[in-house]
Image (cartoon, rainbow, N blue to C red; front, top):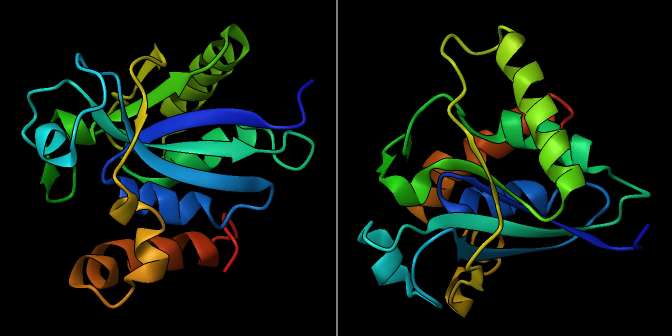
Amino acid sequence: MNDIQLATFGGGCFWCIEAIFQRVEGVLAVNPGYAGGDIKNPTYKEVCSGSTGHAEVARIEFEPQKVSFEQLLNVFWQAHDPTTLNRQGNDVGTQYRSVIFYHSDEQKNAAERSKKSADSSGYWPHPIVTEITELNNYSDAEDYHHNYYNDNSNQPYCIFVIKPKLDKLEKEGIINK
């Protein structure tokens, strides 16, 4: 088993997903990026147009000895609403879809089991619409997106969208402060 593995999740705005996974023990780094689209190295403006097929994602480097992929999946399910198609709150478009981009057959199988379990849990009133697909066409987002919440916590989007998610997940013991 490798000392460091990768996971790639899309669950709305990558600023939210990045901020959440930065607070999970065993996560070494979180990089906002784009994946799943038709063009190589798209820009933020291109992705926001909804025309590239890319999703905003977070690529997570983690130590499986400290946090398993299955545990990361549990955080993922709690970090967003996986029952809304192509939207999270006021962020609307295919770039905000709920998606797990797997890096191996083991991750694919784990994601499918986890989705089935989450869907049958009764936690959400509607069926989960999260895509599970092989990672393709990943590229890092522009530098100004990296560490966005930590560097811009007083911005309105951070105050009204990201902070309440962090507070909820922290209160539930899902993430660290």
